[in-house]
Length: 88
Image 1 (cartoon, rainbow, N blue to C red):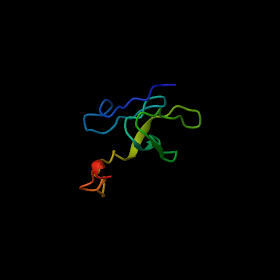
Image 2 (image 1 turned 120 degrees about the vertical axis):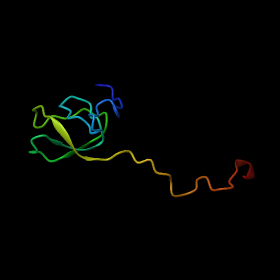
Image 3 (image 1 turned 90 degrees about the vertical axis):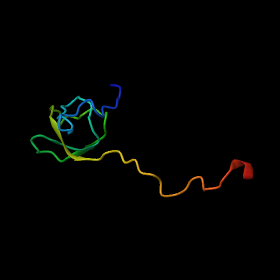
Image 4 (image 1 turned 45 degrees about the vertical axis):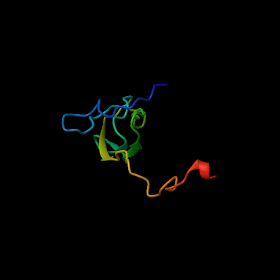
């Protein structure tokens, strides 16, 4: 089994778009990937996963829709403001 590694910036083209990985390569970015010929339905593949084959044949993939990691602050205060373990 191949080791999963994060490839956030190593496989980006000069325009900042992920390159076209082939079957057996690690996925450069999380998102919906389609084959270059577009005959197959897009597949959701996470970054670092091994790019799959299509019907047992090797394929070259292109990124259809990218889902960058969302680093949003939570919408709640946890622990609540003013909370202290000493108060328990």
